[in-house]
Length: 78
Image (cartoon, rainbow, N blue to C red; front, side, top):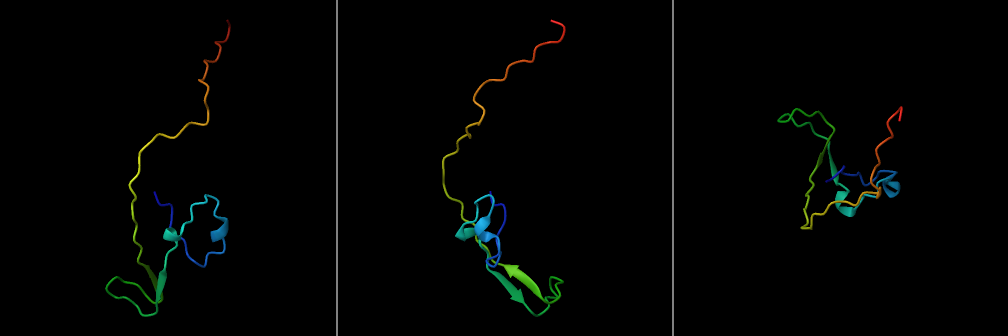
């Protein structure tokens, strides 16, 4: 899953808290200084041509961080 496309001039791109920024997720936003009446955009507006590639992999369930089974809470009055 992709969380977002990053702008190459983002000042926080090197300190991404999810450590999810890869070269493939840095977009090339193009500025258009002419209006686009066919889509109703006034100038300036930006477009992004981004291609996503899914890689084959093996599905597996994540390992839970809690390893012990939960125990039932003792009933009151016993």
